[in-house]
Structures are given as C-alpha cells and as structure tokens.
Image (tube, rainbow over all chains, first blue to last red):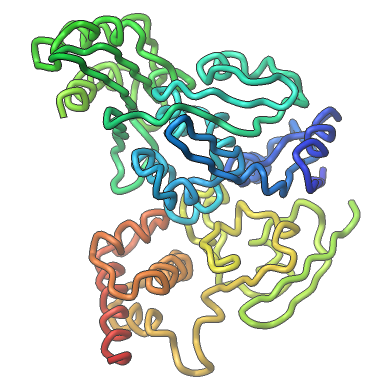
Length: 265
Length: 160
C-alpha cells in the first residue's frame, strides 16, 4: 500500500484534512516517516503544513510560546531559550535536531521525548486547534483520546528564573536513548524550598510528574538531609518500563541517585 | 498510486524525476537519480549513514519525504570533490585511515562538512558533538575525529 503526502499552506486546512480516516499528521518526520519505514499500516495518508506561524518562537518576560513546528535546532539557536538548550541538545544528533519538532516530541514514546520532560517541569500548556489550551500533564494523559482532527499548534510557559535544571542519563555517549531523564524547577525562599516541580522521562511510557517527591521537598532546605525524604518518595507509585536500554529494576535503582545529584548540583 | 514530480538542485545540477508519493529522499537519490553516496542503514534516524544537506542544513534522507524537497538545494558526499581533486575532508579520511568498511563514511563526512562550514576551527568536543548522530562500528571514532581536526587544520593553513 502506497503512502500519500498532503501538504497544506495553513494549519486550519491541515486540521480539516485530519478528519479523514487512516491519516497521520507529520511534523519533522522523525516519528512518522520512521513508522512508515518500519511498515506501520495504520495510516495511508500523511498530512503536514508549511504554515510559518507554527514555526514561530515568541519570548517575553511574561511568557514563552513555541510553535509546534519549531525544531530542536531552532530552540537551541534561540538566545532567550538558553535554559532549554540542554533539553534540545539531548534530542538526537545535529541532523535529527534540524528535523525533530517541539510538537512531535509531545508524542514521542519512552525512551524518547526528552524535551517534553523539560516542558512538563515548566508546567507548559499545549495549544490544540480543535480542543483549546490544556495543561501538558493533562495532554499527555489524554492525547490518545483527543479528536482525530485535533492539531497541536504551540506550547507556552512562563520563563523560569535561574531555577531550571535538566539531566539526561544515557549509556551511550555523547548521544543515546535515555535510561532516565529528569527536569526540575526548584524555587527557594529564605533557605528552604518554596516550590518544587519535578518531571521524569522513561519512568513510565510517557513523561510524568513526581508529585510525591515535589511535596516532600517543600519547606525543607536543599541539603543532603533535606532532600532525603523526597528521594525516598520519588519511587512511590512509579512503575518504570523495561526496554532495550534498561530494566525497570535499574531505572528504580538509579533514579534517587541522579535526582539527588540534580537537586544538590 | 500516482507518480509525483520532484525537482531540486542536486550537487549543483538541476534534477527532476517522478516518484511515488511517500518516497523518501534517500530512495529518490539512490534509485532514481543514481547518487548512491547516502547509505540506507537503519531507516530509523539512528545511524546517520543517509545524512545529506538540504538548503545548507543537515537532514536524514531516510526520514525526509522527497516531495518536501521541491525547489531545495541538496548536497551529498558525491558532490564534494572538485573533479579529480578530493575535498579536504575526503583527503583527511583517506590519509588518516578514518574509514574501514566505509558504510558510515558519507554520512560522517557530511556531518563534518556542516561543522567546518559553520566553524572552521572546531575543538575536539565540537567534532564529537557534530558526528554524535552518526554511528561507526569499525573505527572506534578516534581516527574520524582526528581526520576532521586534520581537515580543519589543512583548511586554515591553506587560507593563511
């Protein structure tokens, strides 16, 4: 069965085309063309748009908005998004980063989707044409149930003060699929943690928040003793996958180690 | 399935072909246009053997639909040499034994060419990062890294 590629000049036209059956939307192609190359027969038509609005990146003190078609390379090159550079650089090599889009990363299954982990720690919102704006955490839980014609157009978030950290653990260096990805946004006031956001990649089939660890950090100092309850709580209710990169046992063993290093680093 | 016209500049020459919709750039280059320098390794975007430049940017031709390249300028390793004169990267790979089986070499050279065009005097770390999306199972990478650094030195010497 052959594939048909349909290219539309506007996002709204592409969205209309998604209503047909056996259609898949393509951002940069690193997920969809890969699936086609592997013989995925669940779609016979690929839809994409060249709408320049979807590639725009807007930054201000009030907020950041990144179009869904913006690539990791574009994020990496943006002077106001330097705190996201480690997360963008974690996605593949230079060629992949010129293709892989921010919107596509929201659909990347573990052990991929490192950039989404960063966005989750930043409490990003996702703009979905046809469904409005929703919290990224909600989007990740509900994405398979969205209307087939729903189209992600952008992500937005408040820029963090100097409080955002990102860490990807791989066995293959400098680039390899993640054993574990962690992003944190920890804010302190008068010597104790006032607000904590921790997102984890590869500890489920998609990025998740470590809410029990976050709660265990609030009100405590950022010291070895202060974070100990959070490291213990980080594994509660988490069931990581076993895949070719690492076993679930290994991921559970190394999560507290790397989370501790990130929190104290 | 209807054939789709694709037209782009390949290594400086205007090329046009009809391909089946959904054909990858890799398949169009190799099977329709006779440029077999990009290699089909994993077809998953993992190995980098199919790396080419599209409008000056590195791309994986196995994950790029040929139809999306209409009007683009595409460069492959086959277009780097100037007649009989090899590109400095090609000479450095040859002199430094940076290729064994040679399957990864075209992708490695394109990744390195993109680096040197952007940064003529790269550090070792820059080179490692530049070829981080390209897998070599023969050399252990060190001869490749040294070849890229050697080509950069040769370029800066000839420019001086």
